[in-house]
Length: 525
Ligand code: GLC
Image (tube, rainbow, N blue to C red; front, top):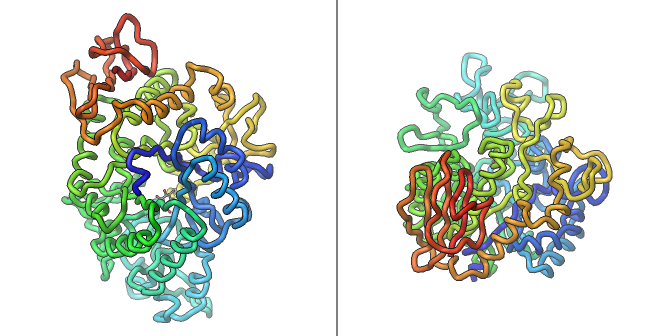
């Protein structure tokens, strides 16, 4: 039963969603308290970012124990309560898994540090001798996605400099060696552990990572490390040896084989692979059900670019018969309001894009807070926590700006997120966007998104998986699902244009005299 084929999945960045115990950090009980909101919003499922035991060097993506809950988020009993209550609210629960790396505090990595070069303990990671006469150069030229070399040197027990280990992300996130059978067995154990607790699926972190070429060759010099931490890996003309190695598909086949014993469970991968031919390999019938396609995240607010992103995504998945998985943002990228220009204009454009997104066939992922039209927060240097800030030598501010807690209600800082001090400061601007007020206001972004989800579920125009495009003025487009009559029109130009024929059933902004103003989208039946 593929319940996800047209689902709307809501991504919860657990740290920032709702804090029940007042320590300023979101937690599982906080989510449980807000399930009514999610039911009202009309989403089908949630995706929880990592809540496992972690020293939080990368806010949970550095996992010290993948089969337990970090005390800051709750405990296993709280997790079980959350799953049970979510199911009672008609919501499925999917969770993040991080198989590319562990925390440096994971018992395996501690054992590796205590063991000798060449030992079985070290063989679960990528330890190598350094280059140069004293081994004081990293084993290859790979860069960490977060900045700086992807290698860190360890000390021998006697204090002398020892081997280097690989970390594609922070030094606190050593990469696992996926040629080691113990690593496979452990992931299988983790999958079953959570499946047996009733989760409805997984999101696989860095699903194009894991396997590495055996000789760990240098990256080609003409593929300069990108200054903005670009993860768009492995274009065909400039392959990136860090990502998208062919052997990773065997890992996905293992994951899928485990899931196939549990009917109705979903696996979606974070696949930053730009080449369609390589991307769709992750979605072959015995691999992932879904792969995030980040083309829409990268497209500017420009009709041709957006249309191209949509068409390329559809073409990529069509070959393998998988549904597309769309998203406008997540906890790693700038929020749509800000990306599309910020202010009143950015806000209008983000609303328009929400209608485009929710008109598309396949699975839609919504990042928490986007339904409120939250912009990125401007944060002062001294509060930044994303490891990118330090690792890039303060050249990249990182992702904290899109991770500021959700404003729920009230007019005092904390805004219902916490009774304590939020882990990142919430700007006064967020006080004007609190969920409680938006629920009461029919013109709010929250009401728009809620209505759009409702129509997506109930209107016959949202059936079928293919799109047909109509002629439209420059800077605009209009499409409908083949065989239906519901049209989605978008105007990214600077001019007001005539609407396509039909009756507007939902619009992201006013439609004066049957016209579609700049930065507006409408659904017409
Ligand atoms: C993924 C996550 C990101 C994390 C990284 C390392 O890209 O989305 O937040 O920092 O993996 O685990």
